[in-house]
Length: 191
Image (cartoon, rainbow, N blue to C red; front, side, top):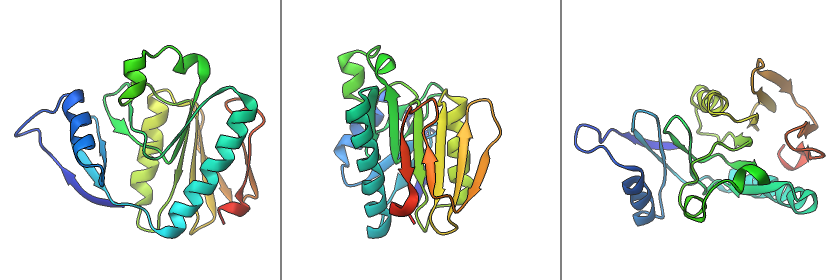
């Protein structure tokens, strides 16, 4: 849920380091920043959404430990996308060879890389259009596969680089395709 959007540009144009320090100085708040430098302040999720996020993340973690193909991230990770935006998907994954191109310093702060995969789980208060725009932004920045899961409507939107969005009504499983080989998400833990 978005609490507020701040436009600090008329006062200060925050550098990446200043934005990072702002986030560190306010650990109880979650920030994202768009390409125009506007900062979105997000509230914490509720219990149901938080539980589903945890269960989904656990599935990714188990798969990733077995596959040993990359690195998983939770919603507290903020990525610096190539377009300059700072985004925090609910779940993200980066192939190991791409992750290894980053320096230790880049890995420690907001990694300057677009994940290979992102997942956004709609909270009851999320705006669908804003979340869809975020998925399109991910693709424009090099994300190969994205899932937008809407528990309320039991609908999943699948975003693939260079392809139209695929919409699934009440699917039972999602497959990681060639981006997450062998990964299957059983949506019983979401619905």
